[in-house]
View 1: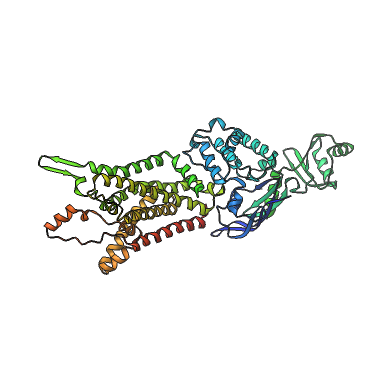
View 2: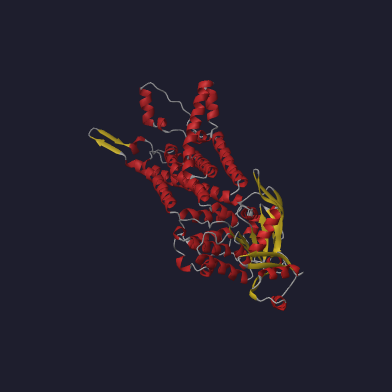
Length: 300
Length: 276
């Protein structure tokens, strides 16, 4: 598998503030990566550095095999950071022609990409007349003009209405299904969970985790339970070796697993002890819960 | 290089206000020919400006380059805004992300400025040549093509001024403020000059003043009016004698070119240093 981007010990300081702190990770071809972190965790700054618009303080990064200059490499990259930036007085097509010139690709891709994002019928309208969702889709079309090796998106659904969010997400999935590597920065956990296979989690410029989304925390999930005798159920669970932490709220018991246990086995076990469950759900922790666990561990 | 020029052409030509200003500028350049039409015909006083010798070769090169250089203020607005708008639209960021290097970005602006200056020079050359051929009293080829260094100075003056505008657009990032800064800078040069005259000597003040950017550009082509035959003869009658040096000096062009290099490099340095 070939490497697209390597980041080594990257640091960026804005005065006394350290926005990115000794960050290292690599992006391999063919995966969908998420950079996840709360606002101000250094996601955009990191992308800004590798995209040649923010100057690093120390550390280094290299595109592809490191033999080409950053701006040459960027011609093989498609990226939008923060808001879509185009010339407001120019039409969609004129804006894309300009991008073609910069990226040194022929004009004939324009039609295809506008069609992909569903803006072909609006191609002659000025950019300033577009809604935010359309602007964002035009930005994606622009980023795809050169059929990039990697597509970098920074908060692509920020500020969009639910319909717009849905359109952008299905677009991203479609692009990913064609084999394009994607790097998606977001503070929305479910977005990363829905779209990405790998994740880098940042907090205050530091990397907390990087790896596959499904391996983020070695977790066996948890049960949500209710029965005719809650007290008895709790003492039963506490005695069982498979369970760790047990919480009780709103009449429901949440019991976290330390080792694998099937829901049917638990049901059987409880019934044998003379208890009847009125509620039994087995869940995997969502990325959100895992994320909160990770960030909390770090702040303590 | 053509790629960089094309990039800039797309940006400028699709903007309605800059398109109108560019067209207006070149129309104005041509309109200097209208001076020829200035005629007063009030009874006994008959005055036809074209007959006063302003279109005589080689004087016309001096006169026309001096007059048309004023119109550069039109282009200054475009140039300042073409730089400042990249900041306000944040397109400078997108251009860099799309794979334009910082060097190419500055270069594309600089090439555009040079092309503007070049086209202006060619325009003035053609218009002056036509006007001269119609009205000049002297039509020998040797005279027609003498003193062409005024065109070189005109070109240098425009490139210098436009580079200054680019730099201000880059530095200030807002077109209106950058233009304000340009006016302010003109005043600053005047104030420094005044202070030097007051505190030291006029000769020292003149020496320093000629190295300041706007003054260096302004003094490249001196005012041509006192050189005009009619004015000279009036002055002679009044017992005044003009003995001014109207020639273009290579050293003066060099000062302007040094400023050009400074402004362009400083713009590049600013872009390199800034986090966008």
